[in-house]
Length: 162
Length: 149
Image (cartoon, rainbow over all chains, first blue to last red; front, top):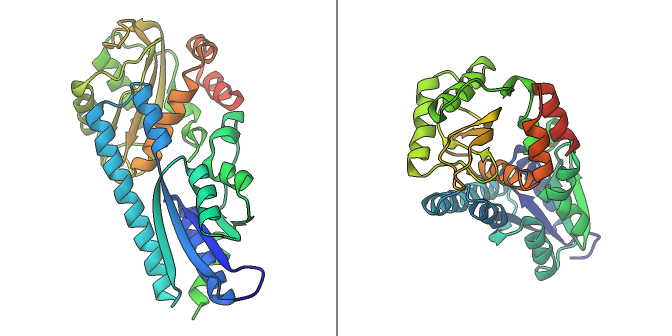
């Protein structure tokens, strides 16, 4: 298809904001006919930091890694069901690594032209600027980025979608 | 979820009065109860001690990060305590622990739990920050320090 948006990637991290972003992405996909992909990244970097810092013991690392993969599956299935309910085809992909890097890689691999992410949490310290993964994704994405805000309005649009 | 979103004056105790590992954990859990974050202190304590029995969360340079998954909290919950004189916590470097981050997470929220712990791991790499934290005199000072970090 022609048009400004052909392939949309929505980043899911399990937050309510990312689910709202998915709802908006589904609406946009339906309206434009753009292909839609949902991506979840298991944050292995954070897990490795904890092992390096000796906060996690080996058994804990394995347990949490399993939990994170289960989370990824659960959230992607939820998004898949949301799309299916609105008659929108969605592809889902789960990756492991540093979220902002994997988002960037996926954009390149799939030739995505629009990244959709949920509302960013408020930056309250300098550290937040460096380590907020959605913020880093926004700054590093090689395509246009849409940040979804106003959960109530998005909910109304999504609910009204037939 | 940013670590700072979890930090407020009512979940910080400076200084801690306890002088043993089990007492410190109980004191921090009580802080969470007083802040209205948990109901059943005994169950929360049991979960934290179960994790401590697998290996102490006392790290190097006076930091301890006792943590556990428990259904006693609905969202990720943290308490911070400072004991300037130090408490024997079986830390990996054999030193007394002075700064405590107690983290309780619901069993189905491993992602935010890991991110909060990783945030703490990154912050406590700074010896200067830990020194300032250890010298803090009030909960407000601790909150301000995290905001400035």
